[in-house]
Length: 365
Image 1: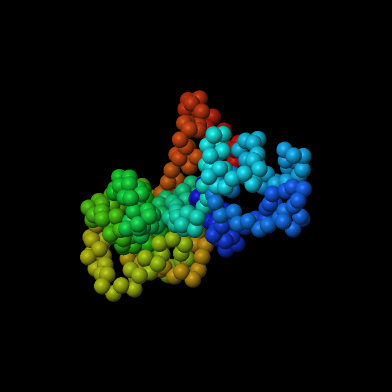
Image 2: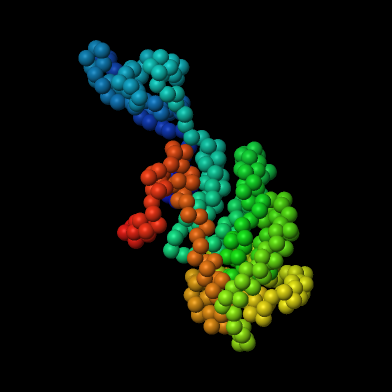
């Protein structure tokens, strides 16, 4: 069962509310015979043993020709008279027939399942979000890494998941101890975050995973200026209009972290501002110094629409943002990335010409 399936958590909660897991109670027929009265034939019997999950109590014809209760195996055609034995008898018959042993879900099992659902749901949401194709995903990668690193940190000392988390975190840090420059640019061109917010998110991830990102932040800052200078030479022009007041709306991830950063009076950006002014053009400097907003009371912020609206004020930066935001985080489908059954894409598709690939994409869409 896929615990990350969106329907499973809801079903899990419903089952916990609706069912008493202390043990089922069924009314079964007692021994029958010529001297048995209707009252003596039926009695309440609490079927608390796990073995009863492998049997159905049904009315069948007995060896003496009368109709009475029998325990019918769910895995084979055999059936047994209910008065012949108890739990040990039925377990023995299951072993003799090669049928699977009975296993029940205890309240502890349900608790484990709920914990796993809560833990894996974060990774499921990240997979779904970053696999989309009709909105920019390059600006979402850092947000999802924040969520996953926070979840790993939360359950690292858990008695139940601790050993599993250690193995997961080791592999997670192997991939994300160095964050791709594309992911950083996707966040920087978000007018609500920019470089100052990115630095705080890197600090948050580093604290959760015990990773030092300070060198990467410096490298990202230098690369940002280099990339912008290339775009400035190609699309450059003098832009002296004042920065617009940002009427922004947040995405539903990681914004509480940025909001705390905004309220933190000890966070100073004076050193960063000085470096911006000394090493970047007026346009990039103005964009990076504008105050970003993380108001969580509004929704549906359209990042592409924002850049389309304010492109006339950020002539060069809007071209950079456009090129960055159209790049998907991954071009590999989640079905292929997580499949253990081999390649999903047929080998013949590896030799398709660019023209044929374009045709296939257009036909599918």
